[in-house]
Length: 456
Image 1 (cartoon, one colour):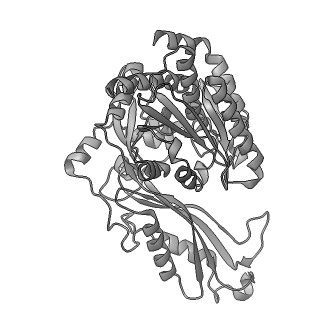
Image 2: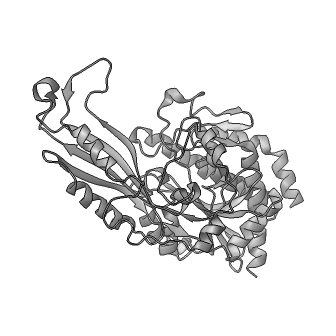
């Protein structure tokens, strides 16, 4: 590993410069006006894979944004690692809240500020550079396949069909993903589970047109007020979700499992200070870590309607809208939860209000085994580079394709991320530490070495 680490150190600035070039591409998959930029990012990944030594590299078209595939099969008898990542990013809005432009990477205090720096360009690109380091030093110990997609941030809706059509070249032993976080730079961790997701948009309609609030106010249902009341009613005074049947399949952790989870280092005062809140709020009877890791949620992600321009317009709006996400835990099924939500939301609509629920996308929760060869290989690798054995944790976010990989390819995933929860992913001023970027590149080759040795 000494040669590999020497190569990484001597090429560190070039690796960063290449990442900065990738971050300058506004590959926002959810907004069609960025479609050309998403395609440009795919070509960038393709070229870098070729330069690093991958073979059979191509930009694979889908009915949405393309998937970049590449591979290096050094010996069919050796284990094969499939590396998954994504090159698309979240929208950068609101732009005015960024200290520096979101698509002009800027380094401050050892951190790279740019949209996608942590989620997931910075973490995905670690794998390409680690692969390059292994190839340049004749140290690749496993076969490798890359599957880098461009629609993760808008639901990965075309990844499943592509996988079904390409199973013949997705044969492997494990999926390796870096799209998660560690507890802290001095407390490494490996995520052993992720929540699922059901995401919907709701539209409520009252009168057939916007009305004068003086003439009609107080006599006709106001869609904005009705929508707010409906959303508020989704939780009771203990923040327990009120949708009938919502908890029916929730897998409850045992007392021993909850006690083990409570050993994860966590400082509530620092948590509140970081968020500038004077208290936390969540489902009664559960800790903050449990609320974000093992319990399901309902959250309103956006709400709008009526007049929001400058000045005043006394209007009773015809329509109001909201985007709502539900994070799911093991045994919950996304389409079942979507149906439960839709039925309930229609049922609680007040008189004079019509409701339409439009399902957006979803994914299933997953739990990954901590006693597998792959998990052990990742744990050993992180212990070597961080100097501490990583702590298994449950992630609050969702990577829907992890369950898809298990269903369609029969492969478990290892979630070996290097971001921090404080990296502001999906928010203005997203950033990723140079320390974390480099640490990932140093750790990935160790995973390959360990996985090859443990698989014998």
